[in-house]
Length: 346
Image (cartoon, rainbow, N blue to C red):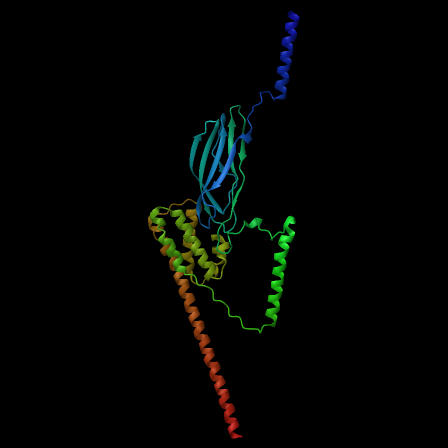
């Protein structure tokens, strides 16, 4: 009996030792980081440049797991993300639903990539780690691009499915025939002088006045106010000062455009608007009321100066062209008079 008990306890001891060796010295946990789920969604499906929207980051955490707040893994100069609020809800099935709201400001004129968001966790067994979400990709409305089309990275030429070749072949043939007919008609048609279409002028001051009508200063939306004002100033420079400001940062505009400006007052006024806007957008600067209440007026001053200069230059060019036309007409009249006098003498 004693021998049998000794053999039994020895067998149990050997099994426990093998279990500890195989499990790394502690019992294995049933926890798996894949049990934590991160879901991302937007408050606006088709944002535009300068828009602010909310990113809803929902984290599903099983019982026995402590999870930290999500945070963006990668930082981008084209997106400004701030954690605003958190809502925790017990679902009753052993899962805690944590919803986090992130305020996002958009500075890119093209496709917007948000994320991934990362959550650090700690289990009751002392196991720690992190898990990341997928990247949320959405199109952004811009001035030069049709944002209602598919996302830029995924734009592909028109494809022909292998299962419906005959269905696609007929309209393609019809289009080819119409193109050939149009080319033949254009070749046989008498050439006429094309009349260029005049571009529709943009009311530059009206762009700032539309921002004023939103009353963002009165509503306390200071960051949105500075984003719209700086974007309007960048668009004005792009259209009127022969410089692609829509695709440049403030530092690039200062370094490349301002040294070529003859009017130092205009360059200083524009630089103050951009410096102040960058401080508000990126450095979380809270300007005093005397600055926020006058930012639109201060932005309009250099815009009006440049517009007046452009108007004067166009007037002088028109006067010069008119004077040249008068000279040409007088020369032609003099030549005709000389010819007629010489014919009378003969």
